Image (cartoon, rainbow, N blue to C red; front, side, top):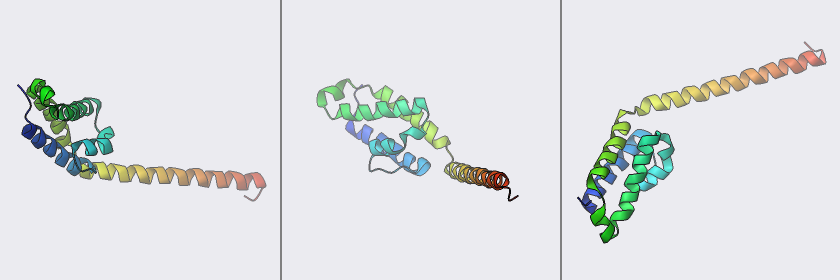
Length: 125
């Protein structure tokens, strides 16, 4: 069964909104949001999103649109949507803040240790 441009536009818009909401992606359409933050997706949803974008390029050509598989598009969209709906944006942001704080704390400990080593080496401590 062929993919209708309206079906693709609806699917693409739905995934675009999910990526903006769940991943904080930027972009004016699904392809742009995928280019911006597709690396945050695991391998299978990322591959499915690439196939969805390729399908969008295929349906622009009327001859290719007739042979494009609608069920494959629906399965890929379901896979990406299932992954995106399971994400928790607040937990992701909290984890990023905690990782940043841990990195800063580690750097401060290393700098403090180096200062103590240099002071000891100079005989000041």
